[in-house]
Image 1 (cartoon, rainbow, N blue to C red):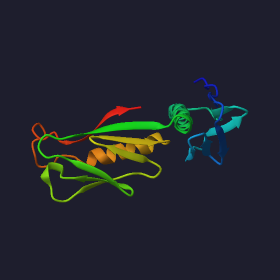
Image 2 (image 1 turned 135 degrees about the horizontal axis):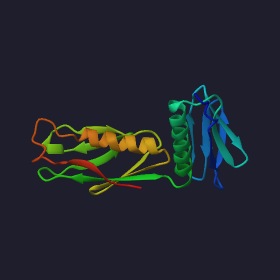
Image 3 (image 1 turned 180 degrees about the vertical axis):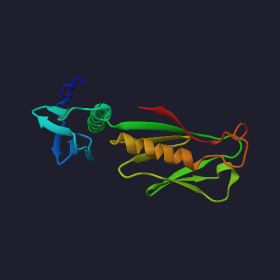
Image 4 (image 1 turned 120 degrees about the horizontal axis):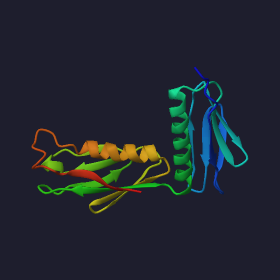
Length: 179
């Protein structure tokens, strides 16, 4: 059985972005803000050389390590895009039976009159995510792709229809555009 060669992946750091690696924690700073993420695996090494981030596997890599190198590369690219351009997700309030009213209250989105219910449903908004309600459109913006997506999922989950025929009751808040 032949030994496979070491795998190295490189990511070019764009102008205006600063990346540091300290004990498996990658920190990225840009014009929109800064964020850090723990990328830890005993066989995978991260290093910054000039304006290039190097991801390498020191020992003979197996399938899992090869996959993790690609995952780490995607995470770092998403962090770079987040601090330079940011992420945005648009959601739309859809109703046919009862008009839904949405508003932001601290770190929660309050959904009132969903399917005519008397109590308000609430969805958690994760930290550093900005939520704007413009009529039927809800816009989520932030620098962390995972937090923007999780906040959108929290909102969709809060308006899940239960104990009714979903072919008739299609009310809810749904993702219409990811940018």
